[in-house]
Length: 149
Image (cartoon, rainbow, N blue to C red; front, top):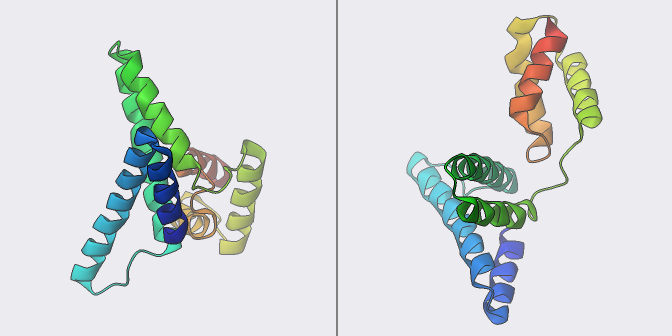
């Protein structure tokens, strides 16, 4: 994942694509921040799964920012945020649709032996472990809750 990101930075630099380069550097910076935080606790550098979590968080932050900019009457800033989202999503695996998400949730419920809402944490942990970067866990949470009730 890191090598792919480095290659993309080089390509953007050669092409003179400043907006893409800026976003790629933001990604690298977020990964470096995680590496530094892990160093202080004795953990290893960010793994590919950690990087996927970082990217998913970055997408979510930009979606919230874009919405805030649109609500504030600043469509040009919202467009910038959406452009960054497109670049970041290029590094994430394909997102699961609703049917795939529900099937994965049902599988996780069966796998963990969950029987009620009190087991929701186990199900969400299993989903995060198996589907990092492929699923919107905010939406999945509500589906898990409704299926466990």
